[in-house]
Image (cartoon, rainbow, N blue to C red; front, side, top):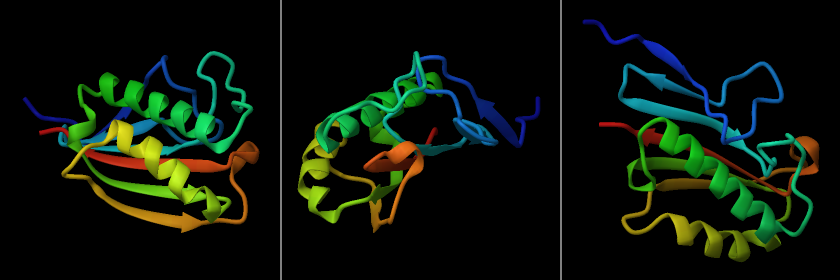
Length: 131
């Protein structure tokens, strides 16, 4: 039996893609690459109103749903990239991030950006190892 090179992840508990991309892709059954998650409400696809803390919690819950759909958990996350519109939000976002991910933490990059889709204040991209 051959494992497909690439399989598209489809999770109804997380927001649908808002453009020509997939929620996530599983490569050879071993690697999960999630598209950047902004704080969209899964049922409506609308941006969650509120401060950066509320937005980060929504993102982490969306990522958790995507991980579950792929049969993974937070401990399998190996790399994240965090995008912030305002670096003054760094400490707040870190505190929420640490509620979901525990030591040993995945590798992470944090990037300041001028703007994010739909006016989001934060975005998170995740890579996990499924084996």
